[in-house]
Length: 279
Image (cartoon, rainbow, N blue to C red):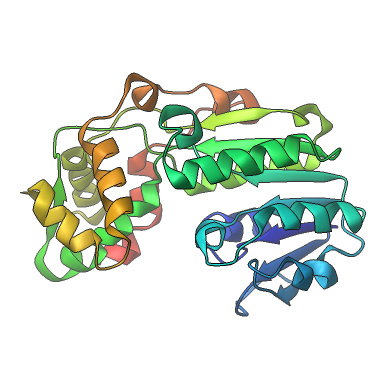
């Protein structure tokens, strides 16, 4: 059995489906129930309380660990999840980390994630670590403005990074969970090319078959919008990356191709598959 945390999100959902389609027994872990493939067991759990994962982990051979905001919640003990996995007899953990532990290692969240990577490496379990960059699905932030005003509003319109389709992260995770070949692997996951916000708007327009304008925000305007849903420190950190990506953040990694034997999907592919969100 394979346990997938964050099973209802934009990585966990396709991962759960891929594993079920491969004939694996899957336990999907999330805070709330959701539609799942036939045969997939659901366990409701809060990752800030690792002991609550015991019912999900019992009898499991592998765990996909996606912490999201749980890593930063007050009182969170993400390292204890790895301890619970080991105590339950889990043999392999695939951890969703972030490219930022390499490219900008000194922010508080990246320091915490790197410490979790180190805990996993020293746990005695088999492991693989996935370090994605920016997600194509972040474009869903623009869905309402595209639906209502046919506008994408973003800062740094002509500065890009090689964002990745979350479905490709899920596919790499599925390979790492099932194939011994990837034990001890650390994979940096990016899309196939650097793409700017202006070009993303054009790809959404092409998927819709109707015009979408691009409106460039100032940094202050973008920060004001972002701090409605995230701490100001995290907004500034994100804007630093978007406005002045380092050479490492501009690097197009070969790791998706190394694992899957194919190129990563483009942002245009993602937009075409998710076009309903923008209609």
